[in-house]
Amino acid sequence: MADTQRTRAALLALMADNTTGQISAQDFRDFMVTVMDADFAYVGDFWTEPRSGPQSTMSDKTVKGWVEYSQLMLSDCSFGRVCYLTPSGWAPASALGSTANQLLAVAADSYAAAYSQAQMLRRGLVYDSALSARLSGFIGRYMVLVSGLPGSVSVTFNTGSNRIVGIVELSAWSDVTSGKWRFDPSWAVAGA
Image 1 (cartoon, rainbow, N blue to C red):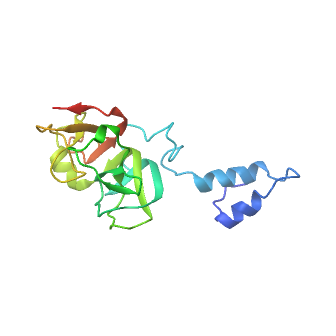
Image 2: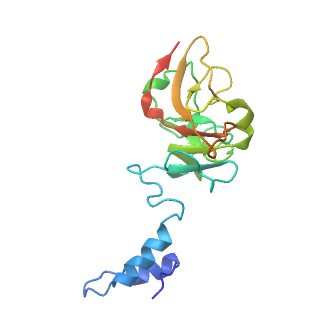
Image 3: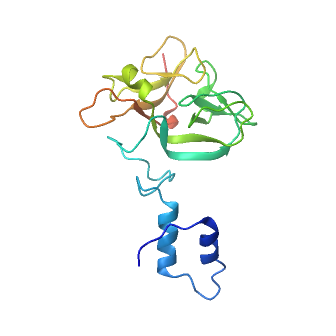
């Protein structure tokens, strides 16, 4: 039997309490094809992130990896900006602040203040074709959170406070005009 994507209600009906062992192997396969992203096997699983190298399936202004859903934005934040978590919600991060001890994420879309359904990338890939010219020839270079516009990133260290938040990735094999970068805030390295 072919694996079938099902609605949430249909899955809940299939996976009831299972007191009599009625969940079949086919029911479980249907569950798996419903919840898994086709691009990689473990969507959102921080143990297995999107693979390095070309990700031709990413459309413009998208993120892949560990995403937190239904997040509250405290102020306006555009796609690709790095934000930090406050006790009340997310706000654009400042390189001049104490970012080494803050939980960081990347805005997965452009959000207005008080928006409560934001998606924030905790770790993974960010693609924005508008970055292609800026990142041209910088494959493998660090992306840093810099002073100036809160949440902005660059491949150039500035004087003052910087924090490494990722690395420039390939868009396609032999393509040096990448608009993709891997966000990984766990480095927590400050540079001069």
